[in-house]
Length: 131
Image (tube, rainbow, N blue to C red; front, side, top):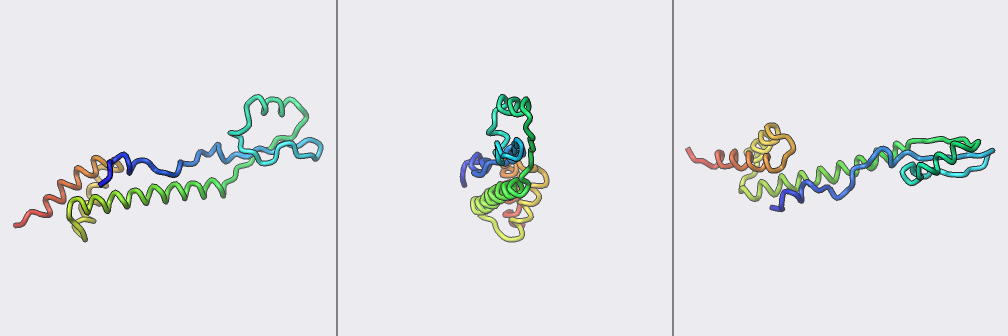
């Protein structure tokens, strides 16, 4: 089983909404800035554009933002599934009992990997006791 920090570090950065705000600046039908991320334009540049008789539009690229969210979520889900598989293997438990132990651990402990692991190990040990 990997170190628990490994499962907490999602390799795909979570998207920031501000990174998907696109700036368009026009002057008399001519494009000055065409779809540049707002985070890449300095505040001074924006102030300069506002002082001039420019038309400024800020649009949101929702398709790209939602795609980035899905990509981050998929990477996070893959890590959680890897954690779950490693937890089952380390505790030598599988099937319905393993799934039940994992479900109980996650319901009781949320998303804290250390707490889930501790509770899962306790429940798995109980399942292994012979009557």
